[in-house]
Amino acid sequence: MVEKKVMEKAHKRISKILKFAIIFIIVLGALVAFTNLRELKEHFLSINPIIFFFGGLCALFAYILEGIFLFFALKLFHEKLPFLTALKYSIVINAVGYLVSFGGITPFATQIHILDYHNISPKKATLTRALHSVIFHMFFNLLLIFGYTTVLVNNKGHEFSIVLITITVFFFFTLLVLFYLVIFLKNFRIASINGICYILNSACKFFTIKRRVKPNAAIDFFNEFQEGCKNLVREPVYIFIMIAILAVDWVFLLAVMNFSFLSLNYPIKLGFLIIGFMIGQIVIVISMVPGGAGTMEGSMALTYKALGVPFETALAAVLIYRILFYIIPFFLSLPFYFSLKRANTYRLDA
Picture 1 (tube, rainbow, N blue to C red):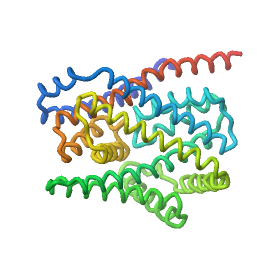
Picture 2 (picture 1 turned 30 degrees about the horizontal axis):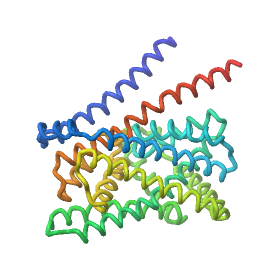
Picture 3 (picture 1 turned 90 degrees about the horizontal axis):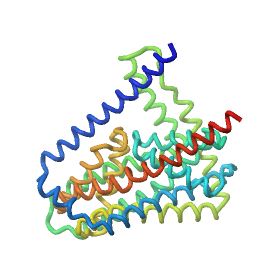
């Protein structure tokens, strides 16, 4: 009986993986269909290994910086985690979280799971991740505006591209503004959550009459998060440290993308680099596909193409970024994760 349940769970996991793999293959296949395969192959054969290596280092530094942020964020919520442990946990949390990110939810889940090994409550693990998300996306907004402004200044008659970029940026920026209104305006938050839950519950009636989405839990979480923000305001030193950490983090994130282009011997303007990167990151979240598989590659490559970058070059650069920031860190995190599992097993046995 037990073996049967284990087999059923394994079968469900494999089925999900296969579904996502099929989505990735379909989207990537559609991209490849519009690509000159010979040129794409030449791009990969001409990768500069030294620049590729520096791109990998930048990705590693980004993960380390997020570990430093985790260390200070936990202190803000009255939790202590050894500094080196925070760095190790961050690599595991973010490597798995970003690779499998399902609409931005997975990093929250992995943080709860990993910090549980150190007896940190799911609530505080979630609150610290939410704090990371809010400050992280503050820079996101600023970079989106900067990138868009640079594109407008450097426009040389590509009117269709500019119209397309303008519509896309306006749509994504509206979503980000609504996100902050939900967090910081109580009445708007309550009305929005109740409205979303009503829509979801109405949709659920077509499938089940038992399950209902309850808004109170979400409202309570946002209220507690606001309390954490108030604690942050009372500690201005923490504000400076956390903003500085994530500012430098963004520098390294963009550096990974930049090195991806440079490894193909294709220098790209900073504003163009930023706008393509920003759009790709938002699509990862709203696509609800794990890790934005295929959707990130498509959105970034098409945005860069709209900005005048050859499509094969753009797609190759985005795939290199995928390898540098997602694939390599994931494999590097596996030894840390398995050592964590072993240590917890020994602790339970004792």
